[in-house]
Each structure stands twice: as structure tokens, then as C-alpha cells.
Image 1: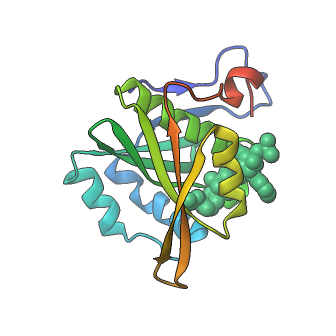
Image 2: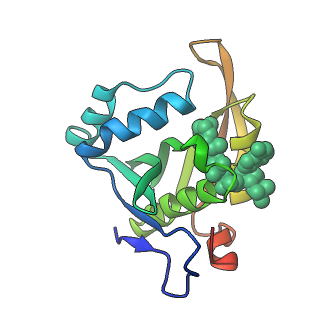
Length: 175
Ligand SMILES: CC(C)(COP(=O)(O)OP(=O)(O)OC[C@H]1O[C@@H](n2cnc3c(N)ncnc32)[C@H](O)[C@@H]1OP(=O)(O)O)[C@@H](O)C(=O)NCCC(=O)NCCS
């Protein structure tokens, strides 16, 4: 996967956004974002195992002005990307960064030759569902009682990687 930063045309007061593979040293920062973002956070050990033991796992860190501002990950399963998590630090939300992060993850999946991507999202997570809908994911079913903390249902979503809509970064160019 290539590293990507905002280009030289970026105005000086715009934050620079960079994507790179997650490393073990990132886990403490990831845990901060994880706890800010999820009622059932993964453990530190879960992230470490993903990076050291799971050869099908790919995780990205999004840095904004050099600081970790979000992460996203997936498992590559034959020709499918199973997205495991995506989160943006609370302070950075609402600036199209989640959109860019998801777009980067989907670009990575497409570059690996994967054909489609799937994820589960809480029925009540209107923000994430809106993001996925905007990115071209379609709701195909429900997993009843998928989340163990409150027995909430998950919406199952899929996207065809070859025919997805253009990402915002392709049309707008900056955060
Ligand atoms: C979901 C998440 C990654 C979105 O990141 P973000 O950087 O805040 O989102 P963006 O600014 O890129 O917004 C992209 C789209 O998301 C949706 N969205 C973002 N904020 C929203 C809000 N407050 N209300 C409704 N929709 C919202 C919109 O569709 C938005 O597109 P628009 O601005 O054209 O309307 C972020 O809110 C997050 O980390 N949430 C906690 C973790 C989580 O729920 N992850 C998903 C698990 S399945």
C-alpha cells in the first residue's frame, strides 16, 4: 500500500492528511480512539494479535498534521474485504475525515484485487449508516442481537468495489 498525503496544492492553513499501515507502536493511540468511539472496545491485545498473528488483517492509521486522528481495518477473505472497524477521534469528526479514511481503506481493498466489501453497523448508529450509504454501501440484511452489550441488531452492508461512486476527496480535494 502506498502512503498518501495531501498534495502540494494544499493551502498552508489546511491540515495535512496522511495514511499509513498501523504499527504496534500505534496501539496506545488506537486504544484512546477505540475507547472514545465504542461501547464494546477491542482490547490492546486484540489489536496486537491482529497485527502479529492475523495474516489476513490490514489496518490503516490516518494522521492529521502528524497526529493519529483515526484508524480503520479489514480482513481480506478470498475476494472480499470484511471491514472490522473504523473510527475518527472525537475532536476530528465532522470534517470529512471519516469519509477519506473509509475511501482509503476501500482503495486499498480494490488495489489488492478484492471485489466487494462488507461490514456490520449498529441499527442505532445513524452517523455511520449515513456515511456508508453516502459511500455506496447497500443494506442487505440484519443480524439479530449481534451486539452483546445491549443485544442490539446489526445492519449488514455491502459495496461493490469496482462500481462504487467517486469519493469526496476526488471531487473536493481538501478537508
Ligand atoms: C462514523 C465516523 C467514522 C464518521 O467520521 P467523521 O469524520 O465524523 O465523518 P465525516 O465528517 O467524514 O462525514 C461523512 C458522512 O458521515 C455522515 N455524518 C457525519 N457526521 C454526521 C452527523 N453528525 N450526523 C449525521 N450524519 C453524519 C454524513 O453522511 C457525512 O456526509 P455529509 O457531511 O456529506 O453529510 C465517526 O463518527 C466515528 O468515529 N464514530 C464512532 C465510531 C463508529 O461508530 N464507527 C463505525 C462503526 S460501524
